Length: 66
Length: 220
Image 1: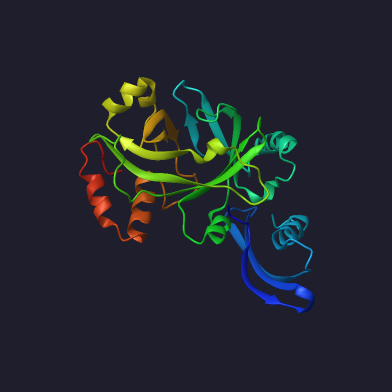
Image 2: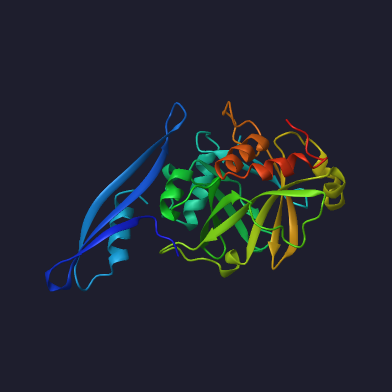
């Protein structure tokens, strides 16, 4: 199973929550030819009740990174 | 036009670059089944065709290699996503330089240049059959190709390669690819230049020597 993003670090927070550091890369074709590669490095707060992968995946899908 | 795939029954499947108008209706068709697909994340899409192993209608998209390399942590020669329209499943697959021992079905009159590696993706249902086969890209003597399909020799040029879909060390079918390397690249103009590049990167000059020792391989 592969994921479209890479988790680079997880920081434990109070109340069993986590701050997850991750990166994702996407490539877009430029109108005049060639490609531009974008890499996003970000963090997301995941509460105790939430599934870490689903939280990251949903956020990236909504923002067109996936 | 990017590559054209020819199945053993001579069905032709074109892979259309996203920059061509013809790609839009193909993406529309794909998104009827896979609404999460976004054109911008791909650089090519194929016509629908019947897959030889999956036995269902599929469409193949080209995924930019940089995107996939960040996901799997290694360099690849090419990357694609295969969508099975009937089962509503998909998989990501990459093509790597072939560096292993030859499988038992390889004969002296063929040379394997690449092989696929298949991946299940998070939140994307997969057809289990997608993980049961591999596609081996190869070059071969005309007599071997002719034994599978004589018409595969028509319009064969320096950018034609063949592939075998293999399950459990058994060849299930053979394909032909024309225009294997995308148009518009001044350096990578045929499969030999691509193979040379990746073999050199992998420090496998022995593979290049072995390739050109084959009498059916003529330097382009």
